[in-house]
Length: 258
Length: 250
Image 1 (tube, each protein chain N blue to C red):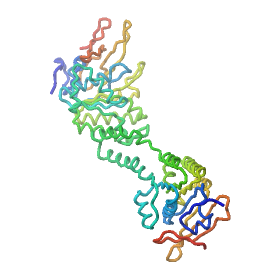
Image 2 (image 1 turned 120 degrees about the horizontal axis):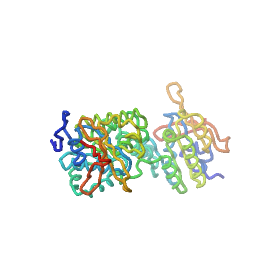
Image 3 (image 1 turned 135 degrees about the horizontal axis):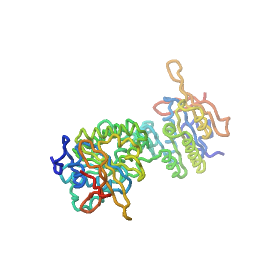
Image 4 (image 1 turned 180 degrees about the horizontal axis):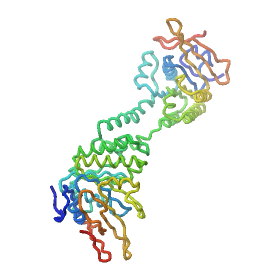
């Protein structure tokens, strides 16, 4: 088991970790995301959610875990091209089936979900289908980009709650550590568009934009993470060909972090 | 003198205007078991020699249509457009797939198969069969004979006003090109407004009626409407045997 980066001073009973492979984030999380957690990665557009989630999967695949990216809004072929510029990306991961991309619209179509609004029965079928794929491919890391687009078709709070709970449980039961990408408007005062997702997820990572001295910085902040101690400070996120770099956002001398 | 073509049933030809006047759209209506489908096949075969015949089938396979005609010794020289088969392949088979995926689960193979198929047939799931019908009819050049068996299929899946509109299109094309058309309809399953709407559009109505008479069925062919010729309406008796359909005055 990969356990590197676990903080020595952590006093909670440590759960097995799923290291994101993003050094700064693993430090914030005392070694990684507690395995089996379903985390909401939330932020407005251009904050790096998709990039971060892809990097999380690539690191997992490089470490030998099978990873699945479920693309809801964008064709996965187009997305695949986005991961190629990384220095550490190895194209054979896709060929070997370590990193698999699936388009959610195909799942919708296969399950006969032609109506814009999905029913409760559709929710069950959708969760079951995701579980089938996770089982078949022995997936240990999964990303749904974005869960907001799925919620858009669920419409009611009850169905959204049901979907997030069931998908979280189905993935957790299979030992799968999952990132649900959530889109919010820059001015939103909550962490998810429907307000339900954030209450149910095991963790919330908020990604944002911050204007400072004429520059638009990307920021990341772990708001909540069940099963681990973590810093709640805001970090600056830098997208580089070597991957995501995180540095503490210095404000008034406080660096936050632990 | 009206220019007519044969129904394939001499007594019926004689009773109307030596056949069906060119440009006419005829409705054949009857309860299940009355012989409406067989009437449609006889009508189609009767035009095979001199006209371009297109037979639109909604509930039988091509072989069922052709074999029935062969059994009675009728000509099968016609084009069959099988809306029923298309509907099965594009809609019903898909429903079967959906229930399979929902019950047995979804695999990566199912997802990959979709990808390769989708690139080959991009319009697969957007077919409107009513549009297919009118498009196929619009391509026909005279002299032509159209058989549509049956209208009930379209009335079941599409809004009734759209079906009536399609029927008007078929009728107009038939009228302007001096072709002939026969559409069949099962009696008693539609609301009276739709049925009246259809009866109003067509130029002639033939109803096949089967009544129990002791230990046998008595069959009557009712000529219920002949446009502008109410004197031609009347009742014939008809029989169905291994030679086909024959009628005589009562």
